[in-house]
View (cartoon, rainbow, N blue to C red):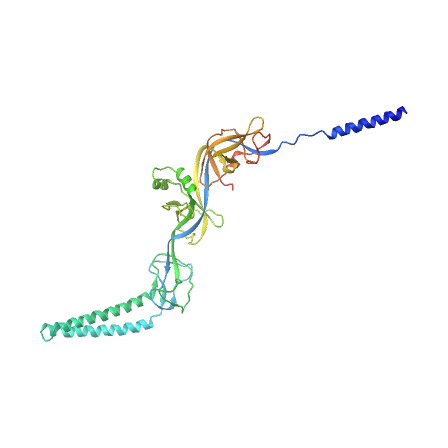
Length: 368
């Protein structure tokens, strides 16, 4: 009987201990977040903008007179010189008209020659001679007009350049009113890259460039790069030449033009690319913009203290062109460990397990 009570008491004790063990709560794991030890850096940041390319001159070639295309002397993509013949329109009718007009000029000239000595000898009135002279001027003007039409039928290139598409073929009827041009000649010895920046970007660019006046700042801007549509950087550097005088009222953007030399004719009108504006920074603290938050008109960075707890720090920053990085003027110091993961989620005072990331990889200007 005593043995039975002993076993029951033992089972009850074990059951109690088991229930007590199940109610013990384990501490949650400390979350791990990436942090970067802050340091000063000298680097070149690249701000990128989509750009469209155009030759220094793009001229639509159109017919000045009516006629059928009789000959085409060029092919698409051909390089031509100023004055080189491109097209010839049919001139048979005009040639016949010119022959008839020339005969009238000859007859009018003969009439003037016949009347002149008669006037000199007072045989006839000079009114007849003046009438004959007026008739000569009229028929001569008609003849010259017809010759001009014939000359206009031979269409020449007004500039050195590259022939564009040839949408019309032999026998096509054209006139000065034809909507589609015969072709387009592009002078691509120099190519312009056109792109747009918003108001903030324009201010960032100008405020990070030396110079007193606006034009002085443009003149002192560094050379720019052009990345072609295949991802390869163009071998020649370009120079920003102009900003539009005012922002577009609909988009709030400024149009910008950069010039690139194109001696090898690699660049063509109508192509696209990416223009890169470099900004050189010396011995500054650079941080990613997405590693900060804006709170009550203040820019905040999160740092980790000696106890691995998150602390919010107000910082003073300025933007650099491109919109990806800030230069920190105050608030952060070298060797501060700044949170670059979980920003906007992790609250101040949270205990974390820092996962240290190399500072140089964070501010790599080539990293997207």
